[in-house]
Amino acid sequence: MAPLLETTDLEKTFGALVANDGISLTVDAGEVRGIIGPNGSGKSTFFNTVTGFYTADGGTVTFDGEDITGCSSHEIARKGLARTFQIVSPFENLTVRQNLLAVHSKGVRVSEDKRERADEILEFLDIAHLADDEASEMSGGQQKLLELARLLMLDPKCIMLDEPTAGVNPALQDRILDRLIAMNDRGTTFVIVEHDMDLIRAFADTVTVFDQGRIIAEGTFDEVTAESRVRDAYLGV
Ligand code: ADP
Ligand code: MG
Image 1 (tube, rainbow, N blue to C red):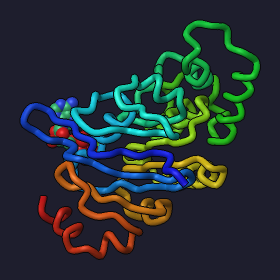
Image 2 (image 1 turned 180 degrees about the horizontal axis):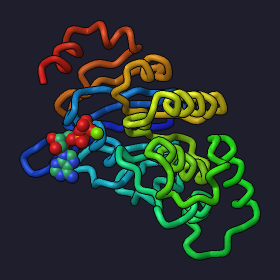
Image 3 (image 1 turned 60 degrees about the horizontal axis):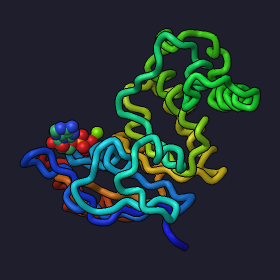
Image 4 (image 1 turned 90 degrees about the vertical axis):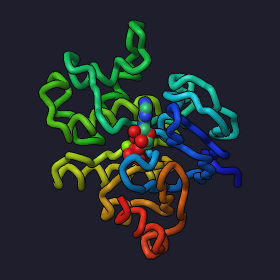
């Protein structure tokens, strides 16, 4: 079976800094891939380059059988590859429901189907009771759920999550993980960057370890965390 997402020798530099130094990675449909690595190892850069927020300086990205290298972030999202940001940024002066309906609607009248889908998603994520509140009134953790809700409006095949539970209280972290598992059970593929090793252990099928812009290990959580070079990468910073 062909992988759903594949990068070959992906490179991103900022001046003299090589933030992604030849990242080749394949993710199968239905898989949950964890990406771990010390701060500054290039994880967010990888997300940005794969999803069209940065232009790659070398290498290719293939998604769902199509070369998407150089496509815009909007095109990539429409093809079914969605991502969240380490720092969330909802439309603060819109209500929670309006935030969902604003995704790609561009001022066009919102269809009844879209409204129904929005309400379904808010129910699924347990934030339906907040639908008419302004996004600015939500806690940081609730805003992370809102960001996820907005992505789901695009019905993505693959979701890339950048630290989805950072700064979120433990109860809400459990709920986010529970919802991610439910989505994966329904077939959504995930690539997740997260410092919470309990979450990675519980959720990821395979883990890729980044260090200084390169992949230094790949395997199950237990396999990679047993490797001395992985331990060194974390302790060496
Ligand atoms: P991680 O997400 O693993 O913590 P990042 O991908 O954010 O790491 O950063 C990798 C390296 O690239 C860091 O040295 C960071 O300072 C640098 N970097 C990331 N984004 C930019 C940018 N837009 N401009 C310049 N340097 C950047
Ligand atoms: Mg990061």
